[in-house]
Amino acid sequence: MKLYEDFILRDHYDVIVVGAGLGGMAAAGLLAKRGLSVLMIEQQNKPGGACTSFKREDHIHDVGAAMLYGFGQKGFRPFHFLLNELEEPIDMISHSTLARMNFEGKEIIFWPDLQRFIDELIELFPDEKEGINAFYSDLYKMYENIVIKNEVIVPPSEYSPRQGLRRLINDPFSIIKMQKLLSTSTMDLLKKYFHSPELFNFYDKLCSAYAYTTAEETPAVLAATMFIDNHTGGVYYPAGGAQMLPNTIEKAFERYGGQALYHQLVDEILIEDGRAYGVRLQDKTEIFADRVIANATVWNIYGHLVRPRHISPDRLEWAQSLIPTFPSMTLYMVVDREAIPEDSFPWEIFIENRKIIDSSDLTLYINSLVDHSLCPPDELVVMAISPNFCSWPHTDDPTYRSPEYEDQKRREAERMIDQIEQHIPRTILT
Ligand SMILES: Cc1cc2nc3c(=O)[nH]c(=O)nc-3n(C[C@H](O)[C@H](O)[C@H](O)COP(=O)(O)OP(=O)(O)OC[C@H]3O[C@@H](n4cnc5c(N)ncnc54)[C@H](O)[C@@H]3O)c2cc1C
Image (cartoon, rainbow, N blue to C red; front, side, top):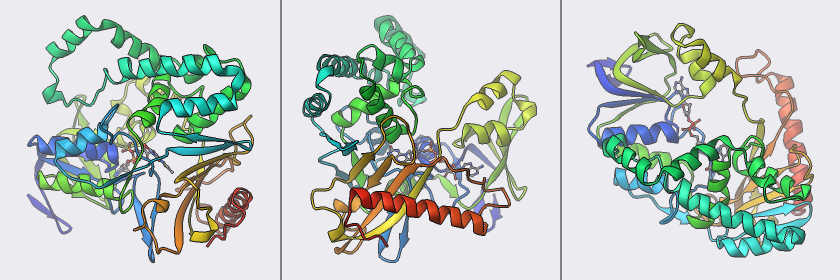
């Protein structure tokens, strides 16, 4: 053991996890519970990655993920599984409605009851009634028979090759169908059921609101999960802010003996003879382990953390061929309670131009409508997200945070605020 800053580092770990996003934390927590010595290293000063919150004065703002799936009693429920495994309680608020979309002036509510939602969709697109019914009926079957049956959340210690083989023999079609769903796009699937371009536009917007991808870019397996799962398992919010979720996982992780090192950037994954044996931090400290799990982006892993000499040309070409989804801009706001209409939903989506995905697509997360601990009673905390196609400098570009950059940010923020005020005219934003 050695003292690293004020942290006691072991000479060797079973596993090092790079990145304390929800993915890395889930792996770290489950491995620690199974008795392995695990070190999780995160560059930020808290866990959660894209699922964190920050506090300003009396207001708790969520940074990213805030409408969460997978906590329900039914359906695809990875978080339900994870928190049960970790034996850590968490207080989740279940949303009674999922979302409301204003689609070029037409309103559609995403009711938890799937049939009620389908009826509403048919009212909006009456000419596609048959296709809509057939699409959801088939999608539901895909979800039940393929997605749920192929849940990949069984830990390796519980998954035996014999079991896998038995599943392949007993139910070969579901595995083959899963492979097919993985390689089919949502747009290809939609084309089997619909004719109206308006409906293709609607699902394009839905994919964009859920996953920041177009229907063409979204694998059909994700459509089967996104379009059905929230009607089956529900949508949840961690009471007290999104940060409560990573905090809860971290608490269990540490209870099982795991160590979390914050504010440290991993610069390289150390590899010899094709095997990772540790990491080197930015300050050159080396830490050793039998295994390394990287929760960083694919571009970071293959573009930096794993040095080129360890990557086969095919793998490198594959990583470089992956295109990031379109960028977005997020505003964290506090508004007067009375400015938001009483009948507003915690998740409001406004689509002004159905034909293209552009900066007029606006999503508001208003979880403070259901969680009153986020701000004083006469106010609401609102997060607004919208695609943004301006050219923005990278964080290592000298113009990042320059006066011009700040000006551009202010102009774009004002544009978004004007747009919100067109939908909610009484909004007085602070
Ligand atoms: C604005 C926004 C809104 C979203 N809303 C929703 C939503 O409502 N519902 C939903 O289900 N999903 C939502 N998502 C998606 C969801 O947040 C992500 O899918 C999920 O949090 C990703 O988790 P992850 O662990 O894969 O990655 P990340 O959260 O990105 O975690 C990766 C972590 O690794 C760390 N890291 C990377 N490289 C290094 C390194 N070299 N050294 C040390 N640390 C490193 C990063 O700092 C980060 O903390 C949203 C995402 C965003 C951005």
